[in-house]
Image 1 (cartoon, helix red, strand yellow):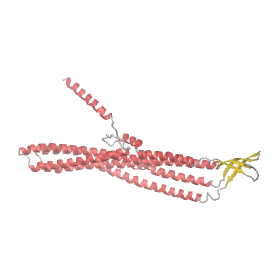
Image 2: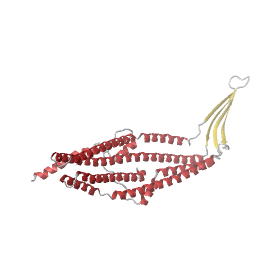
Image 3: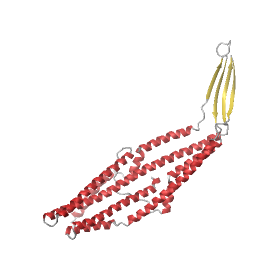
Image 4: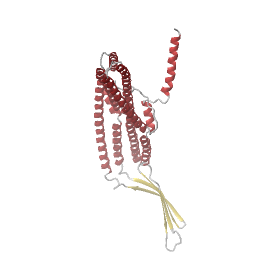
Length: 398
């Protein structure tokens, strides 16, 4: 009697040791997959490089002008070689306040680039998360089909034996066989869908191999109120933030263009030589933007007004989209909560016992069981839609 508890403990420890490596070796959940895709996705890699190039270009827009060097030799009739020459070395630059205004504009432009990248990253990771959800949903659906196939195979063996003993009809056995054929077809379709989803997920990972082992959707923010979900989404949405940053950039461009009337300055060194004599001096000049700045302020103001309208439109679109998703989540949660999956599973067990004992016919069994399996599949579909709608609401937190 003392050996049995010890044996049970040994078996439990062995099972735990066997399960531990399987869970840790290459196991990847949704978070692991998203991290991998963020690093390996080719589109995101290209965007990072594009932003590096754009950032360097923005910085170069506020550089000093290139220095100018001019040398002019003069020749005179009767004089051998160069009679006289002139050397001018000059440097042009804008007024210091112009550089300060352009520097602030460049900073805002770089922030806009970062937000555009964040929006693209969010969209790609959301697609990846939805593919993970699809795989979890398909895995749950396949588990339900596997359970149904197991029950059908056991019923087929039982009723085949009953047919041999005269306790069942050929019609009943054929009904079970047809159900098994339908299940096998659905399983094959499900496995093909799983393979397609996994290939799409691998493509997002730059074709680097992935191992996705998650069985559940994980925690969700379904406890947040309507107002909390809406405020979180509106405050963090990258479409709004990007439009807002673009509006700030163009507002700063107006301030930059307001200083276009300030003359450009030029200083330099001048050296004149004639024969053996040379004279040195300084060059001081200014360039007045009488024509180059024409209509620039008008253009900047029009662009800013367009950016303000795009910002207003982005807020309207995001608000309406989020409100629709929140309403969808609320309805799906209400529908999901009406399903008592434990009761449905228990009823399947009761039906199984009833048909095995002969209390109901196989036809009556399938009438009831098909309805229960259909309800369980509907529940899994609603659960998937619910998780997808939640992911859409909180996509900016990815």
